[in-house]
Structure formats: structure tokens, C-alpha cells
Image 1 (cartoon, rainbow, N blue to C red):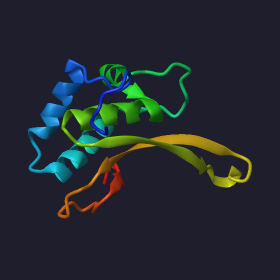
Image 2: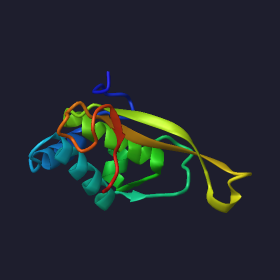
Image 3: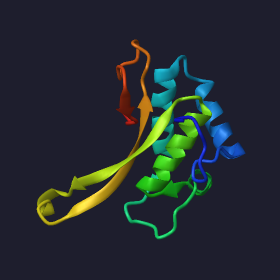
Length: 130
């Protein structure tokens, strides 16, 4: 289930090439996950504003930018192309000084961590640029 493609996470040739270039340089699954996150955040500009149109992972990779939702879809597509189970998570967070009156929607990707040698441990962990 967590390796499947969706309309937004379709693994285009560009995404497959991007994922392969990362996977080929990593020694194991935890390093693939870390390199994916680092490389993605170096390559893709994250836009703070919301976009009215939902974009695909391929569009974000090709165009080099996206909002949190777009970049999350790209992270999912790339992780899954490497065989790393990943899921879309959404929620709300309170926003600084206006926290009492302002709630923002947000989303992120998490990966499955079944390997006891993985620094993330067992279960699900957030993709983060460490």
C-alpha cells in the first residue's frame, strides 16, 4: 500500500532518474532516506503560499518549486521509486504569536522504519533534513 503510485505521485522517468541517482550513492535504506531529503531540499524551492491548483510530483521536480503539499507528493514519489514505503500525513499547527486565532493546515511525508539499525527506530518517522 505505501509503495503504490497515485495520480499525484506518478513515477515519471524524471522522478525515477532522480531517485536512482540518489539510491545509487547510498549504502543502505536509512542513508537513501537521508540523501533523498537533503537532495530534494537543495534542489526544490519551497513556496510558502498556497496554490489553487494541485500539482503533480513530476511538475514540482521539473519546475523546481512547490508548496508543502507539492513537495510532499514529490518526496513520496521519489521514496517509493527507491522502494521506501512512505505516506502522506496532514494536520494543523498553531502559528506563533497569533496561535490563539490562527490555525494553519500543513502536510509532510513519513517513512516506514522497520530496520532496528535505522537511527529512526521502528514504526514511522518524518522525513527531515538533519
